[in-house]
Length: 326
Image 1 (cartoon, rainbow, N blue to C red):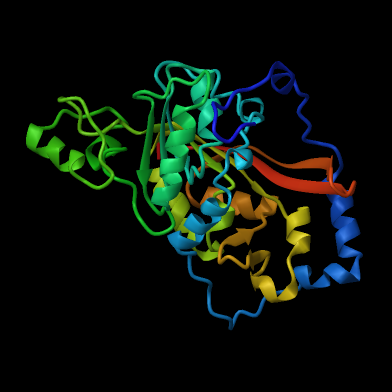
Image 2 (image 1 turned 120 degrees about the vertical axis):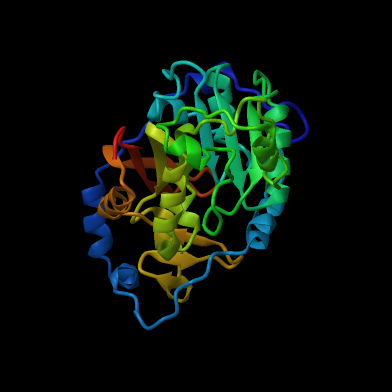
């Protein structure tokens, strides 16, 4: 992939077989828990330790600067196989990508249907600019009027009213006509967007994608983050979730001094990584008022091309629905 040119997809890549159950998670768990060198990952974390604070946006800006080349961009082509609801959505579906990074999730979503509109937030302005550049220069993707990136730290801030205003939330997702003065208030904000003259907001979101997002914020902020996401989701809307699972190889690489919580770690650059169990995900999403549709471990075995070592990756895959009536 050429960092300076258009980002395309080859026929061979498009037809590549997708694996998600190469080994059993329970077998991996038994191996890890029987290995004394991994015992510190399993021990309780002292409750007297101060709770970690959300990483600064500067930490993520630095992260994306270090990986600013096109080679770091990997379009998440598995996304539509894991979440076919995006392909089968009817009408003009609205998708909110939370923590969009460089746009690797946005690209396949825009590519799959010309009627989908994607709103994407991130805590780093530099990252949003890079995502906009990548998305707009990707071959086969028409992003005009369909991709709307905006600056927001979802672990600290509420979503802007133009996504789903309180009036529409109380009227079952039907967009309410407001006076021009009221509309003007939404358009003038820092996270502004052009609305039609008779619109107060975009009317809520049909799908929220959270792909390796929640693991990047402190565990003690995840519940409030999910509540914010649910607030802009239409009744009947879906949250599509994928993140790091417990005993993933990257978890086992962290050293004892990098632990900042139970299954929670801090990298040298100040960014966080949490590793989810199915039970933890279930409890968090149920507490946010969501219904569980799917929840499982994805266990993928791959080989490091440089050293030939086997890598056992574990991710959590989930789909959750907002009830049509509360």
